[in-house]
Length: 218
Image (cartoon, rainbow, N blue to C red; front, side, top):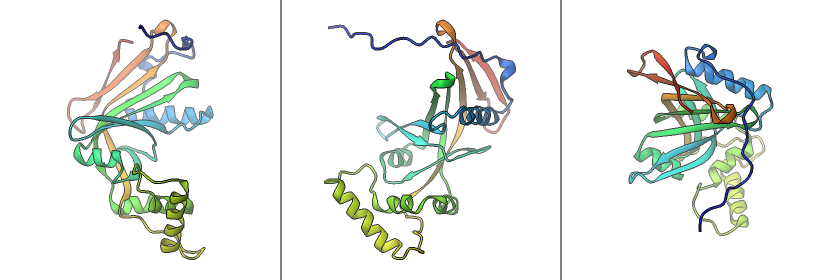
């Protein structure tokens, strides 16, 4: 039996993207688009699909939140024992995609991944809400658990051990921290009418060298 088409086809008409619109550095271009997404009140403008692979090459993808944008790369935080943490320990490379449907824009990037220092992770962890800090202690991310009650019991136990008084704040868990993706490739995509999308790729011939751009066919 053949599959049936699902839903209506969108006809993208929000804008065009030309080479003259691009900034020389893809990080600056990314910041520009992120700021425009925030200004347009796009829901979760820093939500990204993160793709990794395990040591056998089996792929996995999930949504994460980008928590840092800098010249050295893109930062996010997670449990080191999670599926993505184990994947990155085996294969320290990843790809990210951000999709802003109301702007008809997509950004893709890929590159090597390294863990952030304990000091960097601790600084970010300290900025999180207390409840989120306790959640990082309570959850063995991705592992089976009997029910919601067991999860809430683990949260209560974490609160008792890590922050027994209202003034106490949990410290950085040893199993939790940050990662930085250092992109070797970026792509900026603007939806186009009749599927004639505008796509531009940034590449480096050598690590740390100048970025070069080229238009890709839709």
